[in-house]
Image (tube, rainbow over all chains, first blue to last red; front, side, top):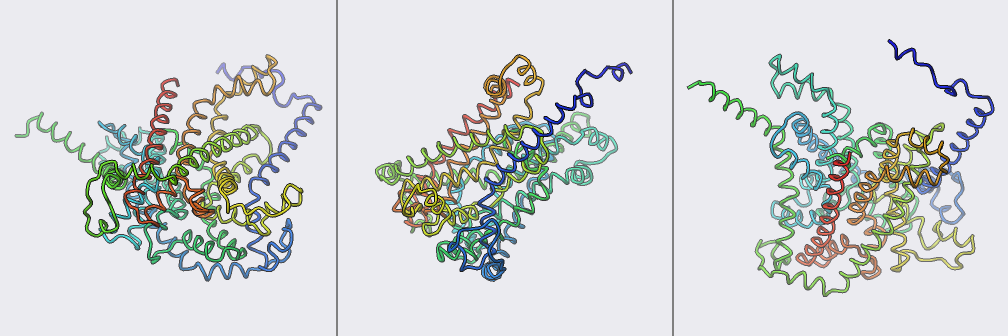
Length: 294
Length: 305
């Protein structure tokens, strides 16, 4: 084909003079150093929390913090773990509940919104976009009164329901974007072959959208794991106390017991680390789908 | 009986039913979990809803009386003023710093992808964890911020950051900027990536310097994305709750209350259900106004595209 024969423009890679190439490498190394500096400054608070969590309580704040801990101990983590293990279990149960509820509602909805055309579809999408702008405190006041009537306060089902409000609209929008990108021809072929809508969803859409579903699930987990507002307002008896609420009570009760406090912070940050490691590729795309596309 | 039009109708009916099976649950969910609570909150704020109404479920209609009480309370005005100032300053720095960092990373150099990923960490942390870290940094005795300022001879005695209105708000703002920075950076980076390189290069050939290229080429092209990032940032910032509760709990007095925390204090500490609901609705109105502008700007940028 003729396009193959198009000549390379002069000055393309490989023909660069040596001086320019050297300047180019120097420039990229300088950029790397500057980039590292930005990251070090931005992430310093997190790094400092880790250092403090590893130092014996006596040395924290008494001596100027070093770049590396003066002395490494896991005593703070032992203390944090034994304090919080019940709360961590509660957080895990609530978060897993939210993931299940969210995916059960969001996956079929996203499939429907991606594959079907029907009247009122744009209203549904618009409503999902708008729900993300509702302040949690407005919901929690109404939830408190309604849940009180329905005996849903101070229990897992109520907190799972409330926490799911962070995740369901986001998950539908993200998954819809993902499922819209699946080739429609596969579904048309399946329909011609006599495959029903339910089977097409279970056998074709679900496996193909698995990366999107995993991402949506991870975010649902993270949203629920980080919830503080509903845990605080819907659990006055403290019978279901997630880690965020446990940390808050620890902070307000033992204001300067920094070592175990920072160890608790590190424990609370573990799911964030996992999401960053597993789903980093999807975060940016997910953010845009949930926020920008309607 | 089995005429063609009837079959056609039945098939259409069946298709409707299938569509409803997929999308119905989420519609029910939105109505039950969002629409109903919001309507409930509005009706609560128009009634003499008290602690005993919780048990009886009965409250007398009082019209706008709760809103009058709320607006007569100077604490509400403190919360409104705080919310506006806090939101404006936080947004300005989040966006400015986010745009600066995004522009920096909009260049090719080794490890830039990894570094860009690491910058997401503050956004992924639970806000309560973030707040706890900054409580340590802002601690009056031996906190890193005070130590740094003392070493630089900017201050001579430690500042108790969280114990006064101005320094407490400053601390809350700094934490919010930090927590929201990744969101701004990542979305603005995505916007910058969509700016065609050829246009930049053409401007460079025409002799435009870096600032001119940014002002005259990049900025106009990322305006739609920038508008959306600002609007979303505005919505997320205006309803801030966790950071304030953890850092100052709205105190001293009500000096660092925002609308969200003020509504919380009214309902859950003072058991002023109707008043708290009214404040929640004021915040909701803020969010609604922003949302309308947001959706309008999306529609506009889509029409332009």
